[in-house]
Length: 110
Image 1 (spheres, rainbow, N blue to C red):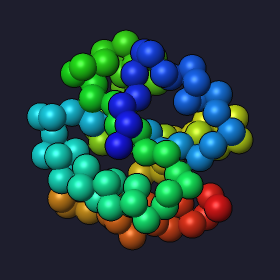
Image 2 (cartoon, one colour; image 1 turned 90 degrees about the vertical axis):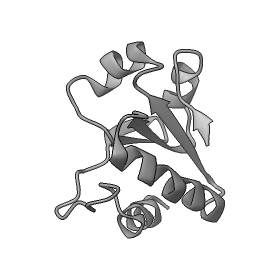
Image 3 (cartoon, one colour; image 1 turned 60 degrees about the vertical axis):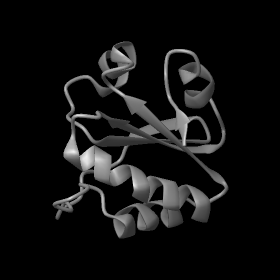
């Protein structure tokens, strides 16, 4: 997975590609358990770019984009559009976003 930060955010946000950006923290148990799922999805969906932004390492990005949201929180960019991934109605107790939930989102984007 790629890192989303101050160095690449303008390029990523302005990209026509499909990008999934997930804000995380190493202190968040949901985030820690979500990362392996994101890695599996990255292998399955080679046409989607996956980025992770650690809010502890990139406070500027957290303030600029995440604002008052908690972690994990995901966003999608596609064809120049940017939107927050809707919170699941039944969040996964271990990862917040389940693998199935993210797969359905990605399939809907294609």
